[in-house]
Image (cartoon, rainbow, N blue to C red; front, side, top):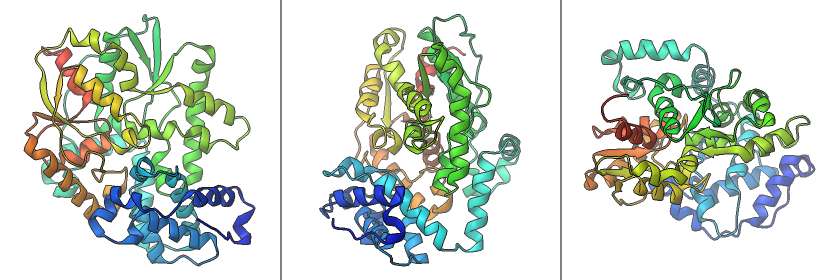
Length: 410
């Protein structure tokens, strides 16, 4: 794609990066075949190719409008297009650049500004945990849309003390998962303990930064990234841990990009690169031990596995996860369009509920004929979103594995 970047952007870091990305696009349109929003709306401007054109126009001097902003907002950032693209277009980085430019030039309606601010502040606040407890107490009285975002509580069970294990890993403390679905962390700790691996949540670490980044508060996101690097660094530098384990694929995808986001920051660039080299999705830790665990497991379970976009498109781990679950005795049922987003996409399902609901309903309709006993996934957002549309249990695969390892209580 030929470009004529405007003078105000030509010599900036983001301008040079965007120009290089744009020049790799060859207009082939393969991306439209795997774009969820284009599949639903059929509008070229709601496809990756259309959004690339919009961003190109802005960088060449065109003034963005509310319509431009709406088309960019509707992108799920699933990166399915990157998996499909034969030219290696880094669409995810380009859409972030485009959104940033539009955000600085187009004023949002006050209702949108308020909702986005509440999400940014509320989901990462210390008040989120008490708010979730209150929501659970009032759950029967909540509107259906809100009730779907408040999972019913399940017992977390006892946690082992893994400090004596020779192998040690760091676990991300996260923001919403410890309060919203603490059973995922508990199951992770028990499964890793069964493999002789101890886990540590480091004081001072917290949200990975994804929520703020995708809601256009880049400074707050970068501050969260730096805080995590600072918190983890002493254990990383000392060699006391072998990995930083992620059991939410959205967080894992974000942390694996710390080196990119902090690449220009003295004091953080090198440390972020070292951090990234140690980040592992929990499936990457468990996979080498699947045979060891399989010997301890009861009868196989009929399951459908929805691989989150952040697992399959951002991290490229769908083949590993599929193989791991099969090796662990989950009878995975095939269904159509496994590559497509379920509509959760972090805060997207709150900001774009109609599109998110349509994509969720399509996903569940594809799964329904397989009649699984459980729907498995690997990210709390997907799990909560899918559970809001089905009576079939939706679980993180690590929870389902933990339940099979400890069938008589935990």
